[in-house]
Image (cartoon, rainbow, N blue to C red):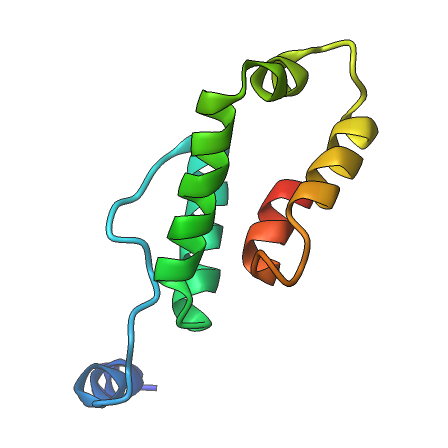
Length: 106
């Protein structure tokens, strides 16, 4: 296969008006970055970026306002399963998108 034939599919996608990038605007490295990138990409593809951002900010606000909840999350003696159960009760499907739920329950 010659060089021009290998480049054509890429060039065709670049000129397509339907091509939308769902990549995060900034690459973050490490485990945190992989989760952040995955959530951004999933929310972008579902056209839920603003909703997911609002949900994450609400949970962050709750952690800031509730010392008991923050202590619960930081407590290493509470099992991951117990934390997942409690967080699952907090981020129920009608109130939170499936993307936010997956982030907290994965």
